[in-house]
Amino acid sequence: MGRKRWALLLAALFLLAVGCGAGGSRVTPGAHVVVVLRADGGGRVDFWVGGGVRSDRELRDLGGRVTAALFPGKTAGPTTVGRGTAFTFARTEVAQAYRRGPHPTFGVDGGDAGRVLRTAGYPGYTLRIRPPRVRTAMGDQVRPPGSEYAWKISRDDPPPTGLIVMRPRLVHWGIEMTLLGVAVAAVTAAFVRDVRIAFAGCAAGLVAAATVLVSDAASGEALGTLGYLSGTPLTLVTKLPFVTLPLVVLALVRLVRLLTRPPERSRHRWNAS
Image (tube, rainbow, N blue to C red; front, side, top):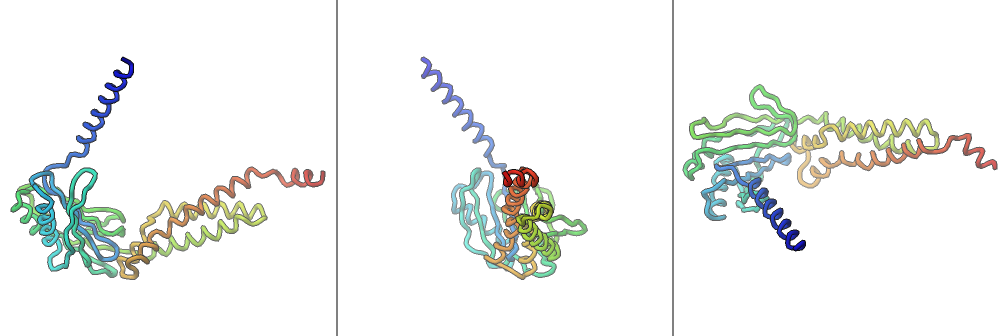
């Protein structure tokens, strides 16, 4: 009887977990569009719906038409269907989503996309636009790196329109690279025999490395948005600030050893005996 009770209890817990998971992954009704703009000038559109599409082919066709409406005159790649954790989505890549430079712009015009969705039976939809991780502005509103623009459009709402202006700043990246150089030099100095220099090196290395990590580690995307780097070089440069992680570990290990080492007099007495 004990085994049966345990089996029934485990089965009930399993069914409860499955039920909760199914409820959490339920897709909101309507159509949903996410536009991602990359620092290399490319972009993509992820599209999914909360019902009404009967096959992958219909989803792929509708996602391609929505992309064509959002990027008029741009050459889009083939639309593919992916399986997400909560929903199936259509993804379309756009090789040249915007022109890079000191002040790149992306025009938001949801009118054509809204008409495509209404014709398909989706009068209400959500639209999210995620620019590269640089400062952006839409109208008088300036947003920090990592911000996105989102709209929830119902049947009678006007379509979203406007111009997103990207404002990449090379100065921020230059400061981070300077701090990274300071962190490397300071941690190197932390391993000299002079205790005072070692303590100072540990402190300076930790402060510089922590500043790089706490600040915007993705500011290297400014190099891509400006048009300086793309592809693999841009990826490597963007990840470069994370070099400070092992520097932090080295500085902490060295600092612990300095704090736990025996005093100089004790060591001299031990060597003399």
